[in-house]
Amino acid sequence: MGLFITFEGPEGSGKTTQIKKAGKYLKKRDVSFLITEEPGGTQLGNELRKILLNKSSFHINGKSELLLFAAARAQHVEEVIRPAMGDGKVVLCDRYSDATIAYQSFGRGLEIGDVRWINNFATRFLTPDLTLLFDMPVDIGLTRAMRRISRIVDSPVEDRFEREEIEFHQRVREGYHALTKSDPDRFRTIDASRGIDDIHRDVCRYLDDIIGT
Image (cartoon, rainbow, N blue to C red):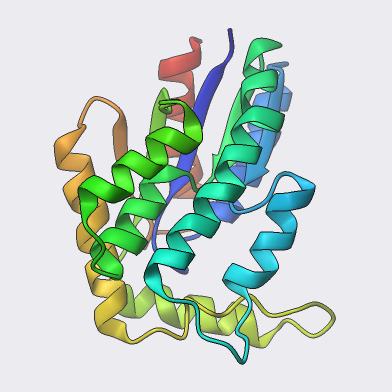
């Protein structure tokens, strides 16, 4: 059986850059791996991603948002993550169920017990072996995120969450901090306000710890 490693963090934390670099590192080590993302990874997930991340003219309430993320995740786990782990691969996933707790429970104010139940139902209790949390002050992260968005010209802009009020993002960050305290054995918090190479070294160290050197 393979390993399941998730990359989490608020907007602009650089986790997507780091997951790509982590893949290159594992390739150098000749480790069989798969990089995937949420929402996404499947045909259904990609369609739901367009609804959930792209700013649109219609409103999505918190409960509907939660259930759409759960639907994408259920498909993703059964179609992609579990089969890859069964093949012995290291699965690197850009966001997973912790994001739903941080964003929909802490951010939106939904009851955390309900969010956990839905997450568990969607995943059949699949929990990451390791979660890397890329943490940074909200204002810095949002500045980075909006700078990245401003450079996008040839594809739909995924800015629905980035355009939430700053108080929402503060609650999300607090949610991630609460999660690390509740499960310290699984989480490794990385200071994402530093340079890309410094962060990457930390990522490689944590990968080596769980995979073996």
